[in-house]
Image (tube, rainbow, N blue to C red; front, side, top):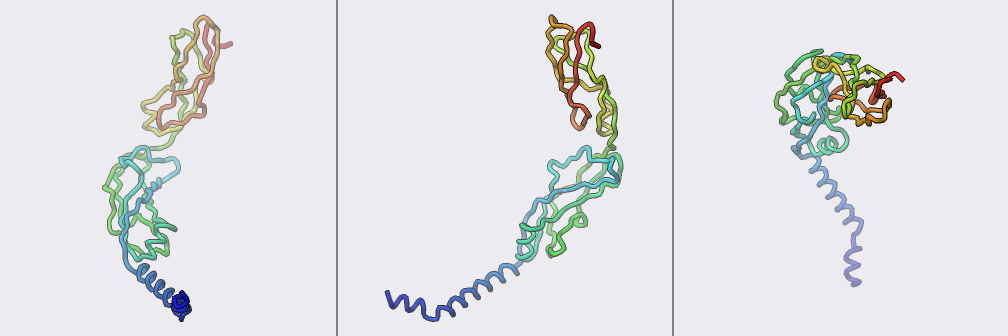
Length: 214
């Protein structure tokens, strides 16, 4: 046992130095070698003005697959400390536009020295619309139907795209059950908001019965 300990302790500092040097050489080789990895990068659309927005896109997820190549050091930093970004400027205020993602749309951190091998994103269509505000009349949905019913407020201000409001003139409440033997009455009802529309109110007060103004 003593001989073993003597053998271990013999020239121990030199052995440690040699081990550390070997590790550093190995790390240097690993970090200097070139590697290829796949990344999912978020796609960010930029419109010409604040009133325009992306109303519809054929892209399932607003992410683009990239294959990049670079030295190990850059790949590690790219994976853990600074991913690339993709910004696409839509040069229309309203209408359909064909989007093709190219290398010029990809931004890498300034310290990154990698190259794009491939972009996994076929050209697709995007519809741009202009954000507007409209007042929509509130129509109560009542079970069973009541002859006299009134909503307060009678109309609400809503925001959405021009194309959306072409097909929507009124806004409905969610179905409300009313006891016709207990009239007049009042109750709170939630609005059944269509997709892609926001309103100042999410609910209204409904008045039922012969004296709906009371």
